[in-house]
Image 1 (cartoon, rainbow, N blue to C red):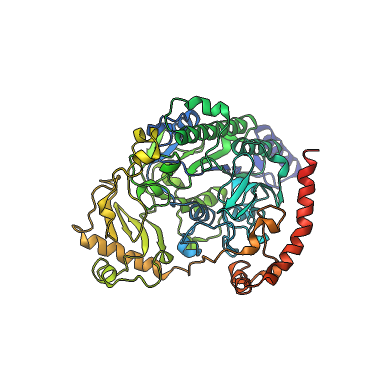
Image 2: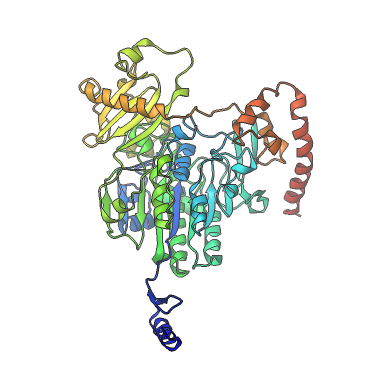
Length: 566
């Protein structure tokens, strides 16, 4: 092709906004990967959203969900760290060693460093990655921090809960410290701000400063509506008519979440992100009825494997959806976001051999059948106390297949099987939320949990788990017990180390922060060294070094705090 002809073609391309090759050939324009905003809300109950009939006002969330796809068969884990770990890795907790409980502030434990995270993978395909809010995936070592696990910026808390204004966080009564971090430094200067408003402001700053030509991943892990129940007066005034004080505070906090999401979406539209964005909203577990939450009509709540603990509020809102204003009743699990979002982002290297999640975008967007047919909620061998094995639990209840004293839960098609101590299985109607807890906490105490170790429900026909079919459907029980055995063969050993006294904030300037150093690290950088350290914590000498180190840090942080009030 002659130079004049090439220039003529380039001129046409420029005029029509087309893309040309170096030889003037027309090329197909590639679409920028979508901006992804993932809202994780803490402890929101299934009933606690307007479109599920709640008295709590959530107009923004109702509208976004109504214009998108409501996920009405969507599952998470019953407590914080496991849900967040599966979102970050696409792997069940039996494959990361986190199958027993949350990660406590003083545990030398975090998300396995050798497991790739969603933001790390997104960075590999050109995304800018930012996080605000609650981490709760461990921070014992610097390598465990969000900014070392794929996020380019982080403003938030490292522990599981804390004051929403002062950011003081306590592990029991004996260890308390400040827990608000901007990157890897304590953000003393931000005390006094309400957490939801503070995180919203940071997100808006990120949206204002980011180059829209580069795809953006925002993980907005709001601290609300987790205890302590706290909200500004302007939000509390909306719910003066609610009889229960915890419910009033909880409702006010959720209204704050609703306003936060609204502000962020408005900013996305004004700054030009919205038309090429995918917004996902999810609770991390069910609500806690004793702390204002409501999962009615589902059974149970936070901490249990009943539907009220694991079936979550969730929806997707995006201009890229092929169908909108619909409900999806396809089976979807929180581990599915990892492969789904990577696929949307254009990540093509396969992690599928190591993943438990599935790419469900076509299910959500187009209504295609979900590739997921079952969910392993968990297998927790630590739940079985040492020396409590009873032959009946294996030979009779477990048909010689499975020790039903082990806490486990699995969903297979329409069926759901539970074994072991799976948490309180009560129902708490919204009307009872108006009364004092002592008047309703014992309501509908079920005898079906006494001296039982296995339950079976047809969740499609009986989503409220009122008809236990374990005795009438033994063949289904055997099938699902066999599935538990198969999964258990792939499980790694649970990682649940004892608390480390070296983690106490008093040794770190009054701040919750990493306490293990490079010299403490084992092959994986985390709990290997902690166990060896624990064997040497019997004398006062073991903490001398950390006390000396902390002296200088404490002086610096106190000077920083004092400077704010001079």
